[in-house]
Amino acid sequence: MAGTGLFAEILDGEHVYKYYADGEWKKSTSGKTVAIINPTTRKTQYKVQACSQEEVNKVMDLAKTAQKLWAKTPLWKRAELLHKAAAILKEHKAPIAECLVKEIAKPAKDSVTEVVRSGDLVSYTAEEGVRILGEGKFLVSDSFPGNERTKYCLTSKIPLGVVLAIPPFNYPVNLAVSKIAPALIAGNSIVLKPPTQGAVSCLHMVHCFHLAGFPKGLINCVTGKGSEIGDFLTMHPGVNCISFTGGDTGIAISKKAGMIPLQMELGGKDACIVLEDADLDLVAANIIKGGFSYSGQRCTAVKVVLVMESVADSLVEKVKAKVAKLTVGPPEDDCDITPVVSESSANYIEGLVKDAKEKGATFCQEYKREGNLIWPLLLDNVRPDMRIAWEEPFGPVLPVLRINSVEEGIHHCNASNFGLQGCIFTKDINKAMLISDAMETGTVQINSAPARGPDHFPFQGIKDSGIGSQGITNSINMMTKIGNILLETP
Ligand code: NAP
Image (cartoon, rainbow, N blue to C red; front, side, top):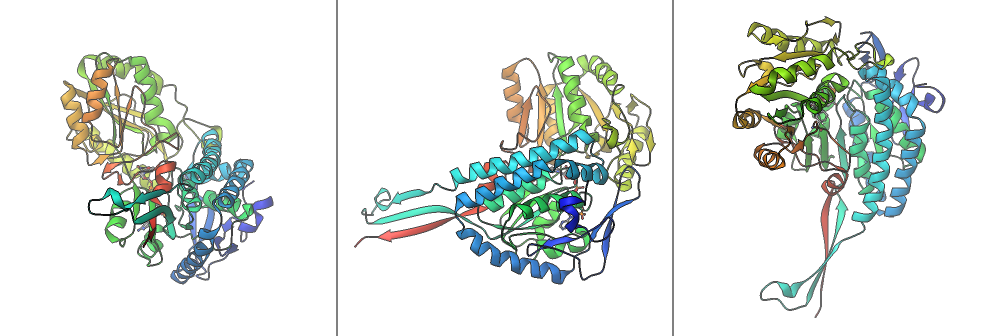
């Protein structure tokens, strides 16, 4: 159970969790806590420490000192500790998954999957790190005009220093370790600011790293509301790199952060373009999986369907039939559709639904909401003047726009301020390639729904969907810089 057994030391009283610094679990001197509301019961489930600016300053100093020693720790030893942490994480998947169910209403099975996938990601990162960080380059001077063969250059990848990791609520564990593991294997230290919803899952995950025996001060986790300590963290002079995943907050951070490398994985409005020759059963299955898994709260969820008019009726009927089979209810029962993360999120989704209603969209199901639970809804005949055609609902509501040409579909996709992923369904691979090439997104999936992963695949957004590229290898590289040693012979 969460907060018991091995995890008992991370608790400070009933349901109140400590933060992690200098290899210890601590209570904030602020005396304040932040409540985490269970999206299903809408009652306070847990509380975490509201860390103060002084505590952040201290953590930055600790992380800086610890990093210097860690960078000198042999690569194979760093990898060994990461493998150990991965094993502990997987062994304790149940209590961590329990927190995911309670904090972010993720269905029970998916919660376990997230923890196991995270352990695998940590192990893979350790393996990849020992390979790619163990290699450098050797350059000689006489390849550049005017030079004799008298200068030699040895290059290797060296760490950046202190990496600030900020993951979002929807994959708090997976998207935290996707930052922590590459940072550590590359010789950096970590300051983690978990999302408020998802913070307790993250604290349990951090404890697995603690149990693995990483040096004191190398990994730190400060809790508190992003709106309160976020700016102080992201503008802190002790931070040498920010790896952030979330929404528009990332755009604001990019403008405020100093001259440091930034990895920003932000929102998306992933389009699903469906041509006349597509296998409509395959499309319907992928729209359900892509649009409604975890109630649409995925960055790579299918967020708008652009279907050719001639097959639209048929596709909508098939999707409608599948929507009717989705189970709706609490995450503990492993329902397909569970409450969205917060009341404000549910209100935002409702606003998009109301706007679509007023402007004449066709409701394939009746709109239904109880608390944060919103029943799955397919909106047909959506037009570009409706907000839902462009905005990210982050909920189980999916708009269908009927198009009369491929160009119209590409135009809609590219007119979006987002550019995360997209997908195209057709049996004609040549057309698929041409359309993929024309779609301005980080990735296009052919005949399958957008998805992040497997975790070693490159993953990136363009435009307002982010900067930099994730995926294990890219993240390791991003969290290093090139260091040169030059030798000149007489
Ligand atoms: P969010 O509101 O942007 O929050 C993300 C993180 O930023 C949280 O940890 C949050 O902490 C923190 N934060 C808030 N204000 C901050 C500030 N001023 N400075 C620094 N940090 C601050 O996003 P979310 O609602 O958690 O996640 C949903 C969004 O993430 C969606 O737009 C989704 O598409 C996107 N997403 C993108 C990817 C991707 O890889 N591209 C993956 C998953 C999700 P608090 O929780 O304490 O506010």
